[in-house]
Amino acid sequence: MVRAVERVKERLARAVAALDKAGVPYAVAGGNAVAAWVSRVDEAAVRNTQDVDLLLRRNDLSGAATALTAAGFVQRHVAGVEMFLDGPNAKARDAVHVVFAGEKVRPDSVAPAPDVTESEHTSAFRVLNLDALVRMKLTSYRDKDRTHLRDLLDVGLIGPEWCGKLAPQLATRLQQLIDTPEG
Image (cartoon, rainbow, N blue to C red):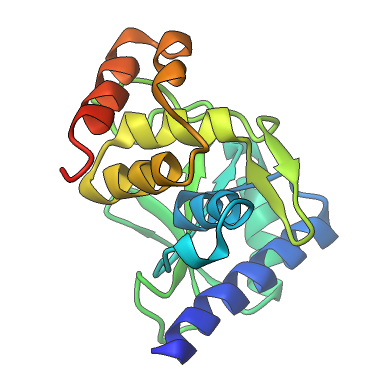
């Protein structure tokens, strides 16, 4: 189990190092972004994640593909998702998944993904800023997104005051999580 967690961290480090070296703008999103934010408040509250999600601009995909391929990743397009498998025999969960900046993740998404500029540097990588991350999680709103949002609520990174600065549908979703913390 520990090795699985380490492999995700290694995959993330290798991917962002390749993108940084190539000068390709990106932002870490998904569970790794939530973990980066939660760890600032309470490292013991960090939840593991099984994959790596990166936000890229579509016009940077070619440069990202060159950089990630040189780092040992294998580009695939599967079920409408652009990804870079961690080697030729890897599975989709052993991949770097791409979310395109400024585009809706799914046609029925409430809002498009933020731009890579809505990010900040950590000691290890660029991560979505908290506003952008919360909007993405509220837009997707799958079970794991709600869990990630509850993690952010639990450590006090977000709270009821956020409802006033969100689009109405996103504010309603956040309020539901606040009102039903156990789901």
